Image 1 (cartoon, rainbow over the protein chains, first blue to last red):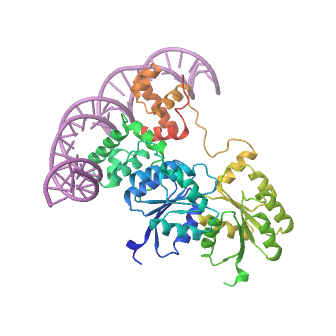
Image 2: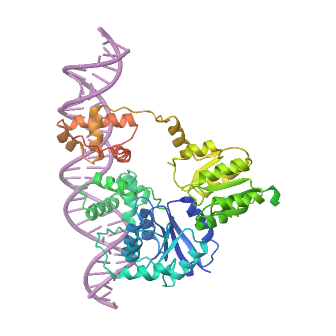
Image 3: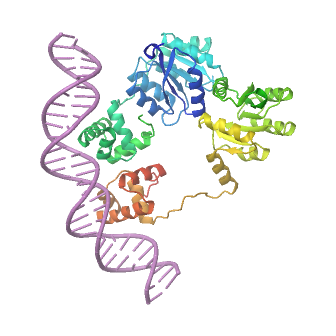
Length: 220
Length: 220
DNA sequence: TTTTGTATAAGAGAAAACCTGATTTTTTTA
DNA sequence: TAAAAAAATCAGGTTTTCTCTTATACAAAA
């Protein structure tokens, strides 16, 4: 099967061991293409900005940006991307919130991996996939309440590139070299970032970038 | 390779998803034979009772029987079986106990799976295998001393003032106003900081300050 | 008492950031 | 599809900030 026809999946889990395992499992399914891996929400947004993703497998309990925030951001900016939550516990308190936020699937990690594969196919086909009937029926009811308006700032892919390099402490000149564009261009992106974030200067932008966890994500 | 010569591994993890992933990973190693899986300590003892196991991969945090009890039981009845602990956190409190109980390896799940494979081979060959960070944590705990190949850098009070303000993203001029000294003086302090930390420029100093947690401490 | 550490500072040159535009391509939307 | 918005690209000039060199005074330590 050609890659274009496969289901494009992105996995986000802060445990590399788990990531390795899931990759190994999904690689056996020939209708699924694992197009990326992330260990935090920042990386998720980073990858989404560069690549189309059909299904996002999201571990809740990631650092940097918690699962819920990531769901909100992803759903807002990429509503067509389906989200399957991978959780440790079935008694997750935030489950209602997650449903409201628009996740398409929810499975607990003590299920077998075939559940995950099923879920991926299911949500990709437009059908929700929840671990059990209870979730589906009882909690689905809560879903018709409006979600809270949170300001979501969207960065262009290039702006993200710059933001990631800013977080490493590079100057415009260095960034330009790294990205094969001129210093001026980099500075334009920086200016845009400053505007979008309503920050007064570069130092605070660096601070923002570091504190939000940018920079660690490799921009391949 | 014949099965008799492979390393016989038993995995115990209460998350089936993880189990599936680990199985998938280990199946690619042709010197390792996964001879069993368990989702709690009871099952572990059960399998050990009728099968020889070289290495037991044990997730701590399993229900029914906690990891520690399992270690004790296994070590008591099957002392020749090596145990590798798979844990979620490096700051595990029981780590000292586990070490004393005789585990041969300890890795955290945010490591890659190749670590696990290495650990299996290592402990099977009679060598312990501990995650570096784990080692550090446990050693530090034992001798409760600040460990470190890190040289202790001492800052003067004034240097600290400046460092704290740097972490807030202020410029020399602003710091000068805040500290009632001239811009030049602030810059001297900054220069000293750069020297002491062997950093090449202010941006990396800001990064350092933020990452080390300066700035939040108010210098009233 | 000589050295070391700390606090203070000026002036010049270099570097980086910031402002003010502007062009081209892509994507969205009306 | 045509118009509008968003994204990517860049130059020139001004201003701010950093960096380097050099310097004085005082206190504590050796």
